[in-house]
Image (tube, rainbow, N blue to C red; front, side):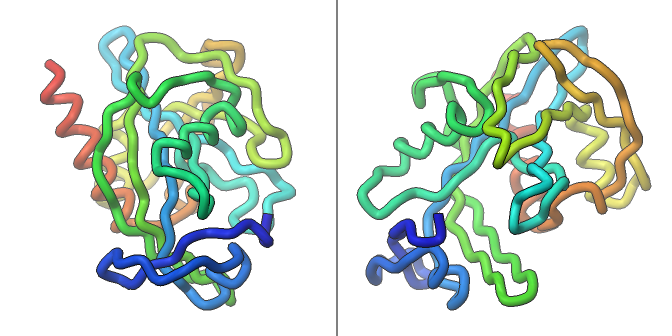
Length: 204
């Protein structure tokens, strides 16, 4: 994967060239990614779904992250990033089933890994929890949190939230979570939650 070729850009989103994924993260070059958030509205509650990153992942193992996400290769269009949804969590969706939430910047440094992304963010809404098939080297599980509870967590209005593991399309068990259990990028999360809530309000 580190040898994958990605387009890179300046901070104004102007195209510069192509480089390997490894080099892009080493130099901290801006690049494109595809993010899919899934929201389930069921029994009067609105849940946001988070994948649990596999224990073997090089970056942020065992932490909760975007429902499905991945890099856009140099020969792909943004919409091609939807392949990540089927690859990672086994859902075959079309781009027409999703709502575009626009672009959100992701700028996060962990040691020598500098990740600067222009994230093309999409929302998929359902009334039932899907049945997932995980790419086990990437994802080890799926958890649902009430959307408003996650907002309160990132705004430090509460110290922990209840997460529900989703197995075979149903809630299997619950556990208490803090923000330390998530891949932490506060600015991204605040912007994503605001846009998701705005979209849900518009759909009412």
